[in-house]
Amino acid sequence: MCITGKRAYYSRAEAKKKAKDMSRRTGERVIPYRCDVCPDWHIGKPPPGLIRGEVSRSEIHQHRYDRARALGYEQ
Image 1 (cartoon, rainbow, N blue to C red):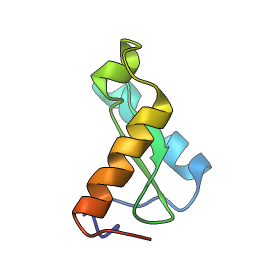
Image 2 (image 1 turned 180 degrees about the vertical axis):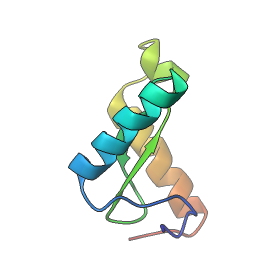
Image 3 (image 1 turned 180 degrees about the horizontal axis):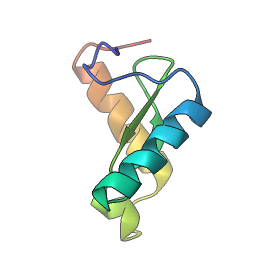
Image 4 (image 1 turned 90 degrees about the vertical axis):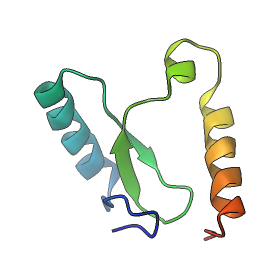
């Protein structure tokens, strides 16, 4: 478990498999992503702006990093 409260997956392969299973079950797109707070992986829905092409992955990562720092979660 990550300090953010999210379930941690210790490898990208493990997170990718779980995301694929979750996508099949829910019918929604679920993707693995590297946590900006802990060294592990999490899964979740991609941000709508990323899907629409309004923001890049690097902008999403920077936003998550800035938010984590503001909350006091730093690696």
